[in-house]
Amino acid sequence: MTVLEIEQLVFFVELKNSVINIEGNQNIKLKFQNEILAGIWFESLLDLVETLSEFLIDTD
Image (cartoon, rainbow, N blue to C red; front, side, top):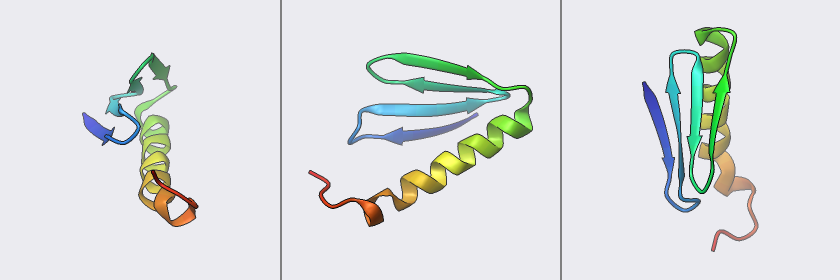
């Protein structure tokens, strides 16, 4: 299981096998066809979050 927590947005994303859980004000469960696809999507999300501040004008 891998977890990404984004404190400023008050939610976290969890990768567990072929399921990605997004938990915050609402909970979303994304069930992928297999673990590889879920892992690729999760890693893409990590890359986007890590570079987010480079593209924002203001991060109040």
